Length: 471
Image 1: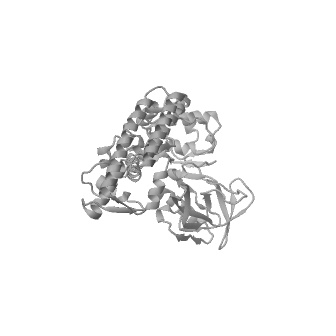
Image 2: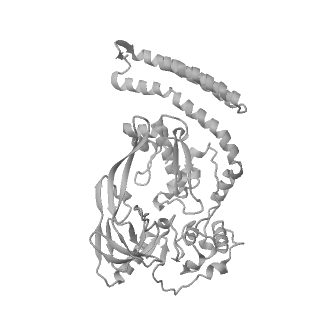
Image 3: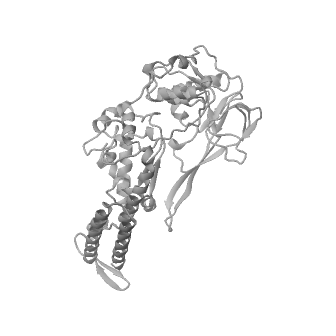
């Protein structure tokens, strides 16, 4: 939490408790300092306190007071879908510091003008009647919401056949349905254990480490086929028809052909900046398992981003904000939806803070002008951040205090002796040059942006860089 006051570490941690976690190794620091753009996907589920933690980590690693250490931030997602998860134990303390758990109420964003662009083309559905129904649910537009059309899919006694998938709100519900369906199959079960190499933490496991299957089981692929044949994709349902030691044969939904599936390998990659300042990756761990899981039922959270042809939904009382919309919008057609319980207006939850945020930040029609303006601001910020030397004085002073107290230390370079006092004096001189240059650039940047003004900044920059190189 963004406070220095005491907090029970079993619930949360405060700023002093968080700072020691920002002591990164040399290669991680190098990577973070070369970072230019940070992309966050599914931002609807990002909590405000987590975004503040990201900000603090980047400022610390990049030695910059700028938000996110000067890194550009691109966030992608539909805020009307799944909200951030806040456990009841931490809910009270979270609301002591934040207006809401949504990312846009993070402290770091208070003085930042966020801009949003809405993508309006729909790829999953094509039926206009279904799209209008989904839009009405998404926007809490009860005047336009056709409940008669929605409840035409209400079939409480529906007996699910193959290819239907239950969308439920909690893991235990999905586990219970999958367990009951698997147990009901008469065939003998077979267990497949994952093969794990190197560094691969349990919370990163993409699938169950012990996958129990039977012939007749309904499964769902959780990744695309890595082979050139592209026989399956993430979200495809299939029926198990044969179990072998090193392979499982399935029949994909809607197809007659059988495909033999082998284990896939997931890699845990470590990223670093090489000597040429290029981002590289190193494989530090591998997880090998079949690329599907039991799928008579799946949670709404795990269905995020997936597409189904036939779904069974029981809205009940446990659905959170956005879950009704997410559940319905996973299906391609309204005809593919079966409702086990009616969806009343009380179950269609929406947070007005989301609509307020998007109304205040939407810039769809001004994006071209904005890009033209911001390219200058970004270039200037990048240059200023590169030549800002003021951080070095604190680092040097801390090093001296840790190694020799307040005494002057002598360094030798190419046969010459240089004292720490001389180094600190040079840093002060360069810092003064930088501050004068900063004031000049800010003054020029306030004017209307023309090629003439940009040329002034380029010429001044060349002169200041010469000064820095000479020193």
